[in-house]
Image (cartoon, rainbow, N blue to C red):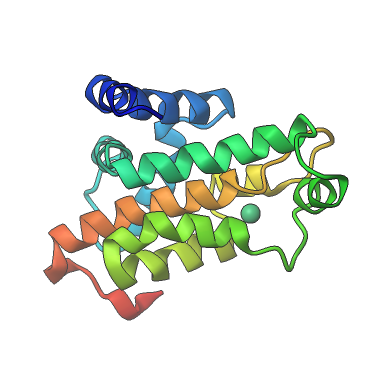
Length: 176
Ligand code: MG
């Protein structure tokens, strides 16, 4: 990519717009992610609102490295459905094979920004399959959600961690 084109992308914030567009295209709204954040944070902050959780999800999504993670993950899912990869990788990705962990590793690029609490939250959301993560986890013919489920879990974990870092006195990080 030329330097000029690169600068244009950054200036117009096309990356953020594209990341949001891809999430929406795959049936995931900011509210869906915020609902998981709400569930994660309610034990610590009972008065927390969905709106506050939405605001934190949006803040996480405004970070460049997060946008790169979201776009890469969702575009891999879409390319898999289109048969863009070799038959062997397509098979692995379409069936979300148990030992394939690259999707989780990519999602960690998002949670890492928020330190160890981000990682703990991510593990919890991924294990319990909270909210829309459970929907994404169901296998549907012709549909690949191998990367997006981890990305949603990572976005929710990151937003919850952001709230936790802002109110350290109200959190017990060992609770999960
Ligand atoms: Mg996955």
